[in-house]
Length: 180
Image (tube, rainbow, N blue to C red; front, top):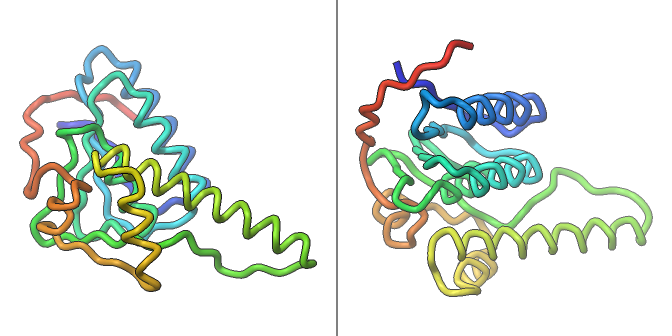
């Protein structure tokens, strides 16, 4: 049986589980690659970016595979997989949008600080998406900032924008296993 990571949300506990399993798979001599299966409506962008940092730092190939949906932070995580290792099931969909917050309150100076931080993270996400997908600098900024709503990608559109490398279910033929 293939050991893998499954992502269905981006809460604190999910991040901790991801980091523990990712580190275990990274350290294992029995594991030649790290598959991450994604079916999520997204969540906390900071937790997502921590996961993306781990993927970028990995010396082992990291496969990201979208099944069902990869919305918001999950779409970003999908694009963070190593080049040539990003898959999307034919019926799956991806959704990207500008960074959003549930509610903001406080004094004007606090709101300004929050606004500046959201802009910084938004710019970082655009920069990373451009890098991971091989699109020109500013591609995702122009694509997403010009769209005030959620932007959906079917498998073909995700392939054409280089969010993924392949449409289909990867043949993960290796038999790496690790006990929990």
